[in-house]
Image (cartoon, rainbow, N blue to C red; front, side, top):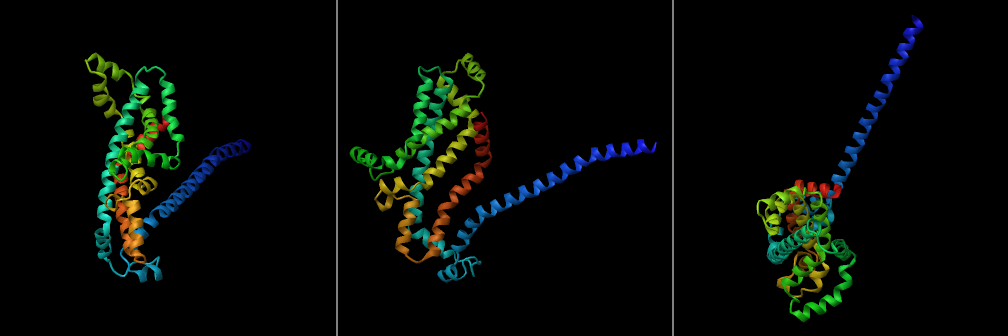
Length: 295
């Protein structure tokens, strides 16, 4: 009996020991995971917070107390940055970004629908040709694009940036939306066709609503690109009244020279819209990307 009892005890101990080990490892893994996520959050959020707070300081506080809090909230720094041209640059960026988002998303969605839902001759070859546009670096094409835009009269206009932002982002956006649309059930197309819907009606009333997550993702990615793009905005727009925020803030900094709080206030105003857009559309953005990549 003693031997049997000891054997039972050993088996019981052996059964429970792995559970304890797994539980300990899971706790350690969770602690390490949350620690890494916390460190990553601090690394991402702290520079933004530092920029916002530095916009309330004066020059002395910026240089003598770079990591400290401002002595008072100097809202006049933000007002001065707004009056020195940020409002004009902000408006230009909104116009160019909004137009490029609408054009890129709609054109790419229509093209992606055709490539994955219609039986096109050489459809796979066309898809590969479109994706080949991802290999073209925008900076390589600056000189021929400059000559082209000058010849057709688009240089130094909003349209120069809108057309370029749309053209260079269409290949990636088509790839993104097409990956999502491929796995949409074709039964919905057949049902809509039986009900008498045309191809255009199927696209606008069936496929687009079902593709809302990936469309939001594509729109947000396009917004980030167009809002922060610098090279095209610098080369193809020379009129001060048409400059977008990235180029306009550089111009404002050269005028202000050493008034860094006002410059940082302008940078905060420039970053605020993209942060708000991501916070508003983050759920659809992440859903669209994860489902699109998974498919």
